[in-house]
Image 1 (tube, rainbow, N blue to C red):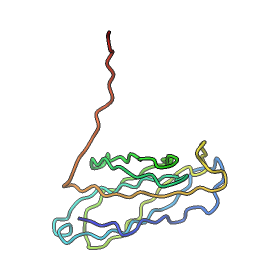
Image 2 (spheres, rainbow, N blue to C red):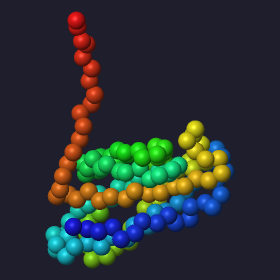
Image 3 (cartoon, rainbow, N blue to C red):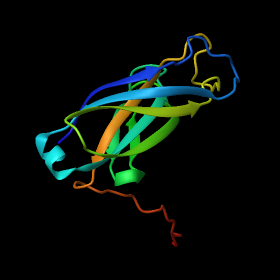
Image 4 (cartoon, rainbow, N blue to C red):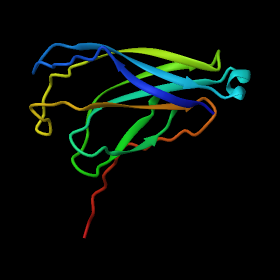
Length: 147
């Protein structure tokens, strides 16, 4: 089983202009793989979810389904604002690897939950293995109730 050692923003703007254009940046993810991963040339799907965190960090509930995986936040304070997602398919070729994942987001977009002085942004990274769990919710449906 793989272990995510670190997740870092690279070149994120120090100052964000309200309603600015797209911001390009890179996310570096350092992963250590198990010897079995290397031997089997295991495949993973790396998911990166970017959030603005207005208060306490929401607890993430992961619904893993290979490249369709979703995070459902369990809010403790104010709900974190979802900013975007990026996925990257990985085949293990060495014990330790650092992956550079480019991303573009509109960081200057404000909502009612946004602070007008500070934007606290974080990335939730998770790996879905090719051999593992798959989960999915059905589409919601409605039925009429008769009395």
